Length: 490
Image: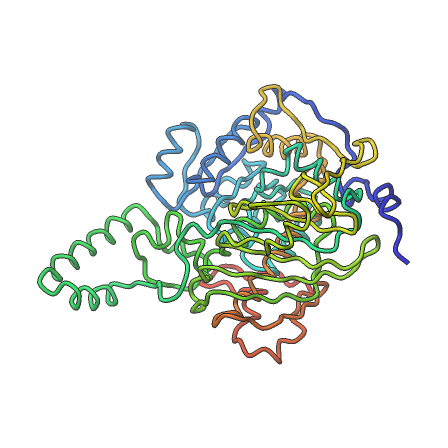
């Protein structure tokens, strides 16, 4: 027999294992000595990484910067003039590991795990961008390493510190719509190119341009060669590729941003947005350890992700709730309108959202309603487990506040303070999300195969029956180009 939800909440709110960390309501100003004591390195300091290391600099001292793009690196060096600069993270670690206390890691997805693992093994605290890893095994690996070494970790889903998100999670956990039966989450991503036949090489380009523009072909080809040369002058392509298989550089297709749409480097729409959009309900109802997943897509070529997909997960009952169906939609697709209208939700925004169906009603985010659309009053906060995230006296936004939560964990030596710590939240959340990509992999021609999953041992149990090749490669990668292999967990 399952324990009651109320009893489960009462017994689970313990440091390191509970729903929300029972470690007090933090309203702490950054201490002057802390500003000097935590030496931080930033690896990947362009785009999101630029903000990550700047915000870390509010609370610690930035002593090292690393980026494979020389322009990006120099731009950040102008901000942190005393920081040493590196192109390859391995050089940074070799020279500075004994001089740093913490690292922000904001590279493309395929490099997250190996860079993060090296820092954790050296006893460094880490803030790694979402999704935590590119593959499922890597997420479990980082969670186990963080637990073993006792470091403070945080994944970069910054909305985690938002009071509204935490209150909403606590409401669903406490049963505001009854026992949750279905969850539907969606996004407008991808907002970058995805789909078939996207890989471009100079040979392919030359053949196409000679057919399409025969009179100007030589000039256009030379112009493209100059673009490639200019791109490689600022970018260390071998360091950017890192653990991924070798391929030819092509301007604009990978660096700076479009890497998300490639299987070798990114994790598609699921990896980009589910760590945000699923975050709240994952915490609320423990959407971990699914038993199966099945997807339908617009099609792909095993090189680039599909332009759109819908993925359905099955989660078994646990100690305090029953089974749950979870459906993910991308490319601005939304749940069936008859489903949302049943509870009075009209014109659902395709930009993104979370729709939850329970035995007493449904919720669209923090808007709770019974069938027919009648409002459901929230449960009084004193009957839920809600803990506010730390707030610094500067009142900075959620992105910086997320770093402040991480620094509070470092200062207090309490890894459990971080909502998105690797062992208890970020790792299991990433595992769940990336299982969806296994099913999308099988959906190369539209309807994919049902993937049955043993979460404890990270194994596809029906692998022998699947017709799609190389499914196991998305569970545990083999690092290329001489990088150290992943540790064996089992």
